[in-house]
Amino acid sequence: MDKKTEEFYQRLKEELINSTIWPSEYLFKFIVPTDMDKIQIIETSFDGMGAVIETNQSKTGKYTSVSINVTMKSAQSVIDKYLELTTVEGIISL
Image (cartoon, rainbow, N blue to C red; front, top):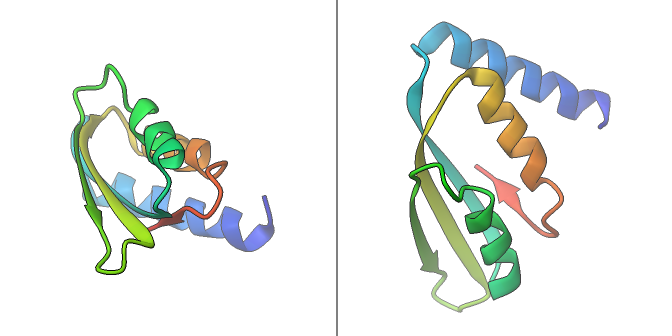
């Protein structure tokens, strides 16, 4: 992980710690090229967590937004989930 990315996740973690009482619901939002395999990887990573997942395809169908509302245990668990999903090619975390 490069220094800029590392600093981003550190700032996010600090912000989450200071603004949230854990465990708490967290809304993950991703944009990914429309590819059922990629969408499935994202959805599968939240299996067994009681996540509510919504997907919406862009007007052109080229991209799909994936919104996941799930209870997370801590700020670090949120960061860990983002890092886990960085392996999905073309994913954009919002």
